[in-house]
Amino acid sequence: MSLSFPQRVYAIVARVPRGRVITYGAIAQLLGDPRNARQVGWAMAATPRRTPPIPAHRVINARGELSGGPSFGGYDIQRKMLEAEGVVFMEDGRVDLEHYLWLPRSAGVKPSGRPPSG
DNA sequence: CTTATGACTATGA
DNA sequence: TTCATAGCCATAA
Image (cartoon, protein in one colour):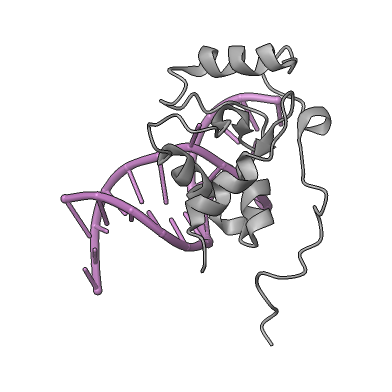
């Protein structure tokens, strides 16, 4: 059975440890469709209001900026959440992805998913 | 089917 | 560096 797109997104976001962040593009890339970065955001916004164990506040854009989605109540809320986990922000108010961007162990290797156009 | 929107990303000025 | 534009694709009307 194939999991839905958002389902797979949650699976990755749930793997992001504390004190780390991940970008939409990275998630989409891990799913095999880097173009679906936008759909990743859509999936996050579609998170059930049951407030599942999905650390959506650790998902930011490729520029290290927060999204301030309704799931947090505002930009400051998301920032406080990350700071509470140990994430330090730069003067510009952005996160240094070079230091906080998290990737799974198998990052860079996708043995299965989307085969080449063969 | 078309049109409009969006928790995005890459490129050009 | 910031600002504007193009490309992308799923969802909603």
